[in-house]
Structure formats: C-alpha cells, structure tokens
Image (cartoon, rainbow, N blue to C red):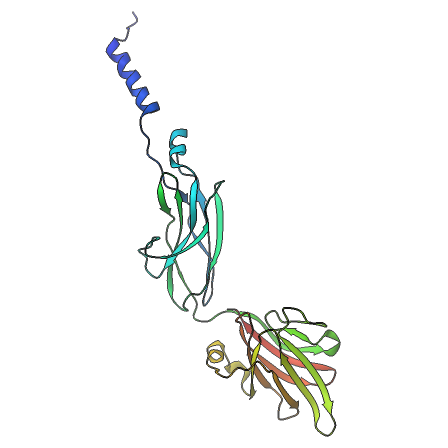
Length: 273
C-alpha cells in the first residue's frame, strides 16, 4: 500500500526548496592561480598568474559576486601583504572576461633583496581577494645582456653603434649610442674618435684589465662624460678600455684591441638594467 505524505511533510519540503531558491546567498571573492616568477634581475622581477572565476554554486551566487571592478599587483618587503601595507600596481579597472592572464615586470627594486608579491582583485560583491603570496629575490648584479669578444667591425659595415644591442648601422637611428670615426693624421698615425650620441656617457679608462671592470666597478666610476673620447691608436693604446652608460640605463665596458682606417677589432660587454 502506498503511503501518502502528510501536509506537514509537504510543507517542510516546500519550505526547504523555497530557502534554496529564494534565501540569501553570500558573494564570493575572486580566485587566482598560483603566481609564478618569470624573471629576477638586479632591480626588477617579472611575475605571471591568472585571475579566475569564483567557484560559484549557482547563478544567483555568481550574480551576487559580480564582475571584477579593479585588479593588479601588490608587493613589498613584508610577507604580511595587502593593498594597505604594500605597494599597489593597478593594472585595470574592469575585467570583462575571466580568466585573465597577467604577466608584469616590477621595476625600481633594491638589489639582493627579498620581495613578496601577490595578485589582487576587487569584485562587486566579494571585496578584495589575493593570490598566494610569491617570495622572490632580486639578484646582486644584473646579467650580461651580451658578451662579444674580439669582434672585427669593418668600416663598410657602418659607423653608428648601438651599445644596448651590440649592432652597427650605416646611418644614425634612435638606438645609436656612439658614432665611430677612424682616420689618419700625417706624422701622428691612426686616430680613433668615438662621439657619444643619444644620451650616452663614457670614460676612457686607459689600458686596464678588461675583466676587472665588473658591474659593481662600473657603478663606482664618477666622472662619465657625454663628449666622447678620442686617442691615437698605437702600441701603447692597445687594449684601451672605455666604460659607458647608455640612455637606457645599461652599463658596459668596451675594449679597443686594434684599429686601422679599414676596421676596428674590439670586445664588448653590456649589462642588463
């Protein structure tokens, strides 16, 4: 025989269903992937991560949480990190579609220092949410952007040198740092003239151990000059070293091994920022 539910049982079921459908729901904060370290340099780090949809149980909770109103990065030297205690890099005001991938460089940091970084996002209903905090350490010195040894530069290849990228061209560009001129003076010999361009500053260190001028030594040179350098190329000037800083903020060292009116043999090390 079938049992018929009493009115009290039917009322209880209706009440439970009504609570599920019409009762209040709690908004959820944004969610995130793990933040990863892409690069660490002397004064900057690059991080990457995703802002994701909240883990809503139903459409009402998703609507209550609302869209992302603001997102970005927060960082500092203290692991107790939030938008009130850390430095905030606001990346955008609205994220229409999630997930969204963020890859961002944080610059202007101290060398050889621990930093704590997190993604943050604020939505309409859930307040501010944070990713897991990433601990990253800047390096003690920047990496070498490139290291060229005993390269022969022929006059036919050009006279405009980009020290940031180690390239030469026949005509001046916005990336040109130095203008190289080699000529002969009767009774004196071959002259090498390097004219600084586009914010380059230089200093002729004379004949010195090229490998001893590491990054920290370049920082200690106080009298860089924007005029350029010029000297007679002879036995006494072989392995003359010129130190420099480009307008991009990159330091480097430049060794002149030999020069003729047709070619220049040199070595070059330029550091990243």
